[in-house]
Image (cartoon, rainbow, N blue to C red; front, side):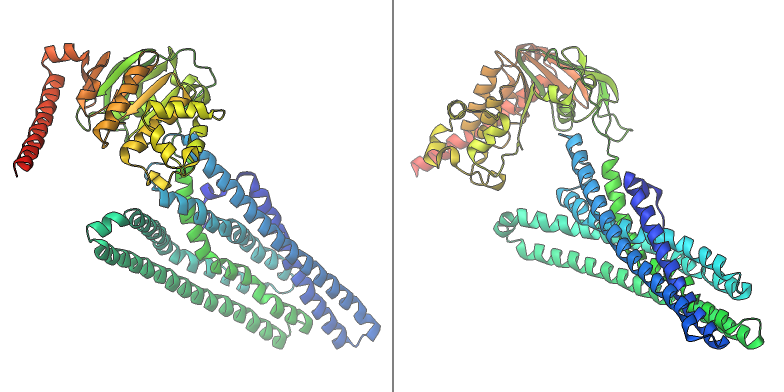
Length: 584
């Protein structure tokens, strides 16, 4: 019912929880004051006091009502303030965490799941902190305080009332284990349904082409039905726990009332004292009853909170404060593991000089992408070190490092904005002349001129561009950035031959003045490289120029020869098809 990690999550906002609890205690004391004023008036009535004497209990009652009203208003305002501050702080922390993760994404969390947790999940935590948490602490304090007040009037009734109070948390604990599992499944089903919906919308074109939309519709219905069932389980659990708590609360209050009546009949309680105990008996149980009602809110918020905590605890790349003094990149005896057990890279040594073209090649799964993640600062090695200009990458500042580095990959993101705005992201002060020059270098200037100029709006996910045009535009944007180190991570993957030739031409030109690192499955693209690293199973097996590696007749030569033979086979097949068509 109480989670220390979730409590620590709100930081300095804990004080607002304490203030809210104090106001709730004050409101309860005001309620007791009202009941005491009524009993005081009854006592005066029994004793036959003059009418003027009733002014004292009346004044006390009015004062207690005023305090109760003020406490209720202030409690509501404070809860609202607490909720708003918690939401604001958590959203800022979540957003800043994502920024600190930088080029590394949140592991194990999809974009839809991340959005749901950071938006609706935080909304659920708002209720946890503003409603459940103050009620939890108040429920622990209220029965003890009431017992201390009532025990002086009649210890028997007070003891019975206090003894019945723990039955409510016992009933809550009885369902808590089941509730945690249910709410964990609830959030799991909720996020997976959101993932599936987003996936279906993004792939709607493919679903229509393959005539798989009906099957996908059935699958989405099944997902929705599973979510409906888990939601109904949550509601059934809530209703069952509420019924149990009502039985305990009203049964306990009824026992206290009955004992007070017995005390009045047997003479050990005065009428006014018996009336007071009857009036406050329910106060013993109301706080815990309210806590039970808020229990489902707590479980839902706690499930969302665990996901937020896992995000906030995600390992961040370590950065320092030094300025980068050189741009030669090195991997020195680097070993890396994603899961802490199996090494993806094993004692890797690579050097990428300040000028020239270096390449990393090998079959899928050999570790190329992991090397890229280390070079761009998304990961840190388990052993060894990554250096830039002789400095450990962990000692330089993120800003300084990225001011030297650009990355062009197969999935470089082009924003849903104008062509000019995309260039301004890379260089805020970029001129139109610089943009047109960069577009000319990638053979896109005519296309842009004919389609709205620099004010042409790029559609979401660059859907109004071909794959080759998107990659060339990404390269042009990075050319304007004018960095000293360029990493091309499968930048020519799945594009047309013309676009591939244009990109590789720019890569070769850039390598004369800058450090260029090329990762490619197609070995024909890396033939001009000054140095090629051939990897197998996380190790550098060979390195050298294309000629040196071919003469060595090792793994690189075999892979290159196999690829060339395959490409020649495709060319021969294509030529044969053209000749057959011409004869026909």
